[in-house]
Image (cartoon, rainbow, N blue to C red; front, side, top):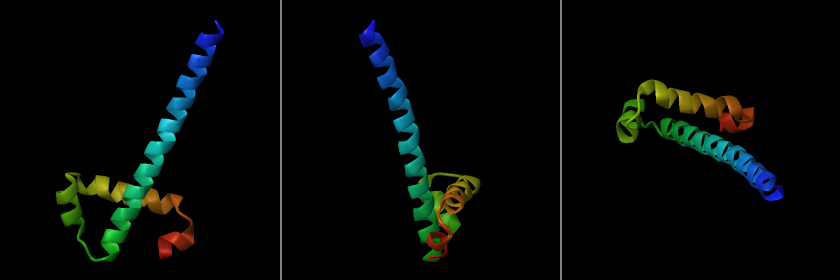
Length: 75
């Protein structure tokens, strides 16, 4: 039975790790969008390149800006 419990704990930890990995990737995408916008790449160009909606692009950028320390957002 100990193997079953250990396997369950490993599974639960993998779920936690996966959520954190996805969160970091979303923030990285938001940062990249923010940086592209600062280089005067239009939101429409980003939308077209990524195949997303304008709202999705805004949401990724906003999520990064809300999570980042203020000095990093201002860069």
